[in-house]
Amino acid sequence: MLKAVNEFIVWLDGFVWGLPLIILILATGIYLTVRLNLLQCRHLGKALKYMIRNEEEGHGEVTSFGALCTALSATIGTGNIVGVATAIAAGGPGALFWMEVAAFFGMATKYAEGLLAIRYRTIDDDGHVLGGPFYYIESGMGKRWTWLAKLFAFFGAGVGLLGIGTFTQVNGIASATTNFFDPKALHTISMFGRDYTLATVITCLLVTVCVALVVIGGIKRISSVSQVIVPFMAILYFAFAAIIIVTHLPQIPGAIVLIVKTAFTGTALAGGAMGSMVIAMQKGIARGIFSNEAGLGSAPIAAAAAQTKEPVRQGLVTMTGTFIDTIVICTMTGLSIVLAGSWNTGLVGVQITMDAFQKGLPFPPYIASFGLMLCLVFFAFTTILGWNYYGERCLEYLSGRNQTAVKVYRWLYILAVFIGPYMTVEAVWNIADIFNALMAIPNLIAIIALRNVIADETSKYFH
Image 1 (cartoon, rainbow, N blue to C red):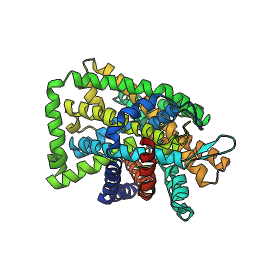
Image 2: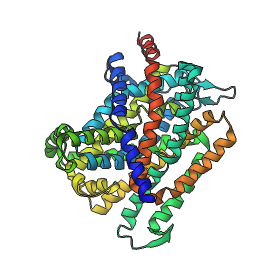
Image 3: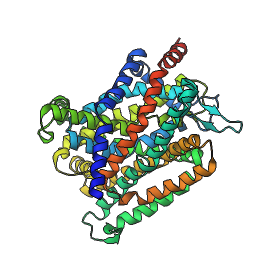
Image 4: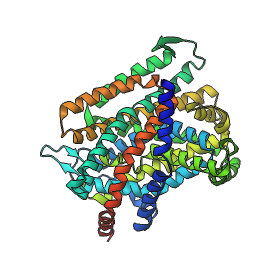
C-alpha cells in the first residue's frame, strides 16, 4: 500500500512539474523582465538601499525590513542546503545553472508580487493587515475570480501545513543533528514500527516547543525573531561557503565550465543528453522555486504587512529576497558541492552538503559538520515560522477571518512539525514540490492578468 502511494506521489510530482509549468514560470519572469526594462538589473542598488532604510510614514504591522526578514525567514531554509544538493545530485551540476536562470527572471516576478501586495491589501480599523495573491486576485481581477483566490488560499494553507513549512524543514533539522551527534545510529528507540535515533527524537521535541513559543505570538513576534536570526544565519553560512570558494580559487573556472556545459548536455548519470538536460532543467527550476519562492505568491503575504505607502518601493524590497536567497546563498552552496565533487558520491540530502563542507573547509571534519548543522537548524527553524504566518493568513482569508479556524490550524501546524522527522526524505520533498506547483498556478495567472497595473505603477513611480 505504502509503495503504491509513493509511486503515485512520484508520478504526480513529475506531472505537475512538467514542461508546461516550467515554461509558465520562466515565461512570466521573462515577460516582466522585458516589460519592466530589466528592472532587476537597473534598480538592484536602489532595492538594496530601500531594504535597510525603513519608511517613516505608511500603514502596516511591521517595518519594511521586518516584512522582508519574515519573507526571507520562509525562503532561506533547507532549500538552500538540502534542496540545492538534491537538485545537483539528480540533475548534475547543470541544475545550478537553471536555478540561477529561474532566479534572475524570478526577481522580476517577485517585484511584481510585492507591488501588487501593497496595491491591493486591506487594513482593518484595528490596524490588522491582510494581503497577498488572494486579495489581488479578488480585487484586481474582479469578484468573478474569487474562486481562483480561494483556490490559491487552499493550496497556500496546504503548502504550509504539508509542504515547505513543516515536514521538509524539521526533517532536514533532524537529519542534520542525527548525522552530527549519532551518525552510526548507535542510540535508537523504536517508534511507529521503525527505529529512530535519540538525537532525532530529542531534536523533534525541542524544535516543536520552540516553534510553539514563537508562532503563538503572531506576526509581530515572528518578525522580531526573524530580524535577529535571519541576518545572523545568512552571514554565518555565507562565511563558511566563502572560505570554501576562496581556498579553491584555481578550481572555480573549471567548476563554472562544468556547470554551464552540463546544463545543456547533461551528465552520464542522468542518461541521454536531451533527457538529462530536461532533468537538470526540471530539478534546477523546481528546487530554485522551492528555495526563493518567486511566482509562488508566498512573499507578498508578508510584504502586505509592511509599513509603507508605496507599492513600487515595497516591490523592490521584496525583489531583494530572491537575490539574497538564490543568486547569493544557493550559488555558494552549489559551487561548494561542485568544487568538492560531492554531487556524484551516491550520498543523499543534507549528507551531500555535509560532505562538501568537510572536504572543502580547512577545519577538522567535526567543526565543519557542526557549522553546517547550526546553519541548517537556523535556516529551517525560521522557515517554519515564516510559513506558519503564510498558512494562517491563507486560512484567514479562506474562512472569512474565522479566528477559531486559524487557532486550530496553528495547533495542527505544531503537530505537523512534531511528526515531520518521521517522514521519509523522498516522500517529503515530492509532496512539497506538488503543493508548490498547485500554489503557483493561480498566482501566475493573476500576475499575467494584472501586468498592465504592474507596468503603470512602475512607470509612474520612476517618472
